[in-house]
Length: 114
Length: 113
Image 1 (cartoon, rainbow over the protein chains, first blue to last red):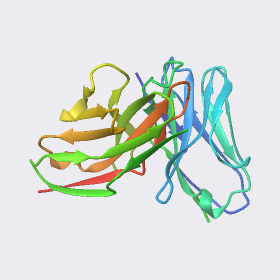
Image 2 (image 1 turned 90 degrees about the vertical axis):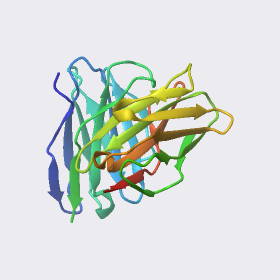
Image 3 (image 1 turned 135 degrees about the vertical axis):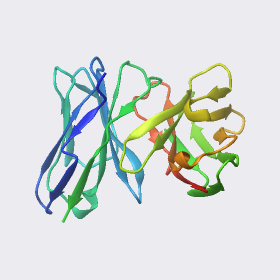
Image 4 (image 1 turned 60 degrees about the vertical axis):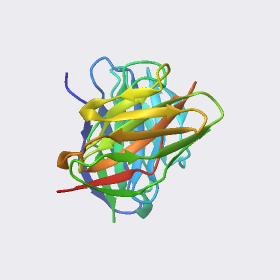
């Protein structure tokens, strides 16, 4: 089975721009979660989708948004980029409906905001 | 809400020596506990998880962890480390009824030849 794929792998943007990141989960997985990883804050939960519905959202400003499509693929969008948004954005997919299911992580998208 | 504290940000250890990476958590509900490993420029990979039952959990690559409810700890151990174990290790918790993982800040394990 193919793993979680994220595109693009690297991205450079300037302040004020917006960006869209894409995540394709493992086939059959219906849950997709997004995390932001920075050296200072570590791994922080952004949001989780299951069957196109956002079930949980972390403590991030409204500039961060996401969606999930009927094929379980997910996108996250960050508008009006700030320097502090520079981070590794990780997507994870899970087969089940509960928090006890293993999350399988993609390699991440490294976003640099100049 | 849950929180995770990894007590050591960096742990250097000689090859073939034992290692323990410490993790403490807090939660007002029952929890599920996980250890993930991240190699440079890669995503996270699950090492092991505790859901219920036996408090000693065995994972991949010779790692094991012990759940201690009274001390709210979930320390990761390996009896003999290899150079290939050099990576960053994250302890994570998911609360019952929650759909998110809360991670610790990570522990960088450096294995010295």
